[in-house]
Image 1: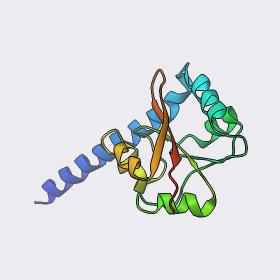
Image 2: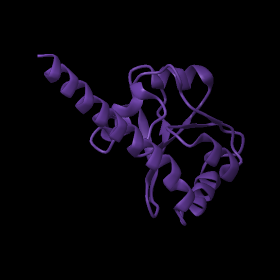
Image 3: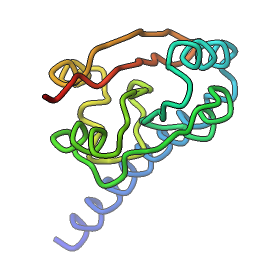
Image 4: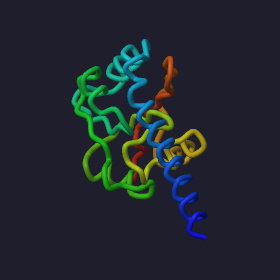
Length: 143
């Protein structure tokens, strides 16, 4: 019985390690993506000057290449994200598909869940880089 518990712990650890390894790989992959800079510059040209970008991940990269203020929506959930953005005066959301620094938001930032954003956000553009899919959204009026 004890050996079965030990095997279970080893398997769980390996799956957790693989998940963390995939996330680390995604974070480092941006450095090798030759088209990501042109995409972030296009996002910068699309979003009005002075607007803050709410991003799913890679805040330093987006800050540097867009010349916009950038925030990660910490302590939000899919249900509270629109209110957080409205209350903070933020209008634009940049989603690096399948990559999120906020665990609670991962379900709506993955390929299968991203359509859930359509209820509160208008998709402005989608971009395909060498490695990533990046989506630019604008918060719909909550009036």
